[in-house]
Length: 246
Image (cartoon, rainbow, N blue to C red; front, side, top):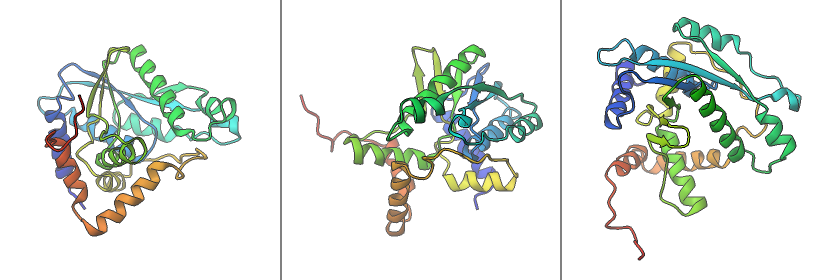
């Protein structure tokens, strides 16, 4: 198990390497209730007490409207209590995303549309609440899996950036956990008894990302340091071996 000091060191390194947090930032955090977003909320809330970090946090939870599918929406009281323990009020944004994706559109592969709509709702809420940045809980495993997803299914060598400017919303999207493996966040959530919500989505666990996660796990049996090597390669990329057409 990695120590919490190791986790915090990697968090601060990512923030410094990619200039993710600056003095005076008002940062919205998408709090889904999963372990990743809860770990991000915990770490950033505690980071505010370190010297040199002066920013404010706005936790936002999107209610997707699972009751339209006959499913139960997650109990938000545990999230509100957790945010209160960090002296942060939870902002709840109600949507009809579940109904649109699964009933109106009846998407065969719903994840892409759902993710797009959730991003839009989160960005709009962040703007309305006066935030200049949005923080997401994507971690190192997400970086690697996205790289392989793009390679396998779109033929592109690409993954998401730790920092992205959204010109249409005048927001900066940041991912402070990109140096942290999923296991470290799982351990952190367990150690501090961070509450997590059950995901009622009927597509949960049956996605292409889940398949790629399994492939990376298989590769790790042959190359134990493959995750670190991929992250290192992303920071040391060279175009010498890449085909560049005129």
